[in-house]
Amino acid sequence: IDLEVWVSGPRKDLHAGVDGGIVHEPIADLAEILASLQAKDGTIAVEGIYDGVRELDDTEEERLEAVGLSVETYSKALGLGKVRAETPIDLVKSRWCLPSLSIGSIETTNLSNQFRKIPKAVVGRASLFFVPDQNSEI
Image (cartoon, rainbow, N blue to C red; front, side, top):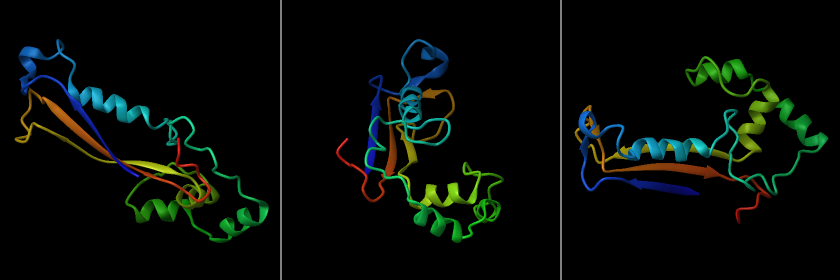
C-alpha cells in the first residue's frame, strides 16, 4: 500500500527569520506524523497492523535458520555499518515474515531549496508492505 500525506500551512512560503517560531511549520508537522508511524526499534506503530501476522512454527524457524544469511555480510552489502536485526533469524524474519513501512520521499513547495524558507505545503510518501495472512482491513 502506498500513501501520501500532505500538510499545508500558510497561503505562501514564508521567511523563517520573520515568521519562524510563530507558525506551525508544515515540514515539522509532517516529520512528526511520519515519525509516529514507526517505533524506535523499527516496528510499525499503527494499532492493529500486526493482526493476523502468524507466529512461525518450529519447522519454519529451522528453514529460516538454514538460509544462513549473515547480519554482517548483509549490512556490508548495503554499505551500512549496522542494521536493526541482531541475529540471522531476526534478519530473515524482518525481510520475509513481518510487515514493514518505508518512507520514500518528502517534497516541499520550496522548489529552489533555499535556506530560511518555511514552505506553504509538504508531502511525504510511504509504502506499507504486508505479509501473508496479515489483515489489511485495519
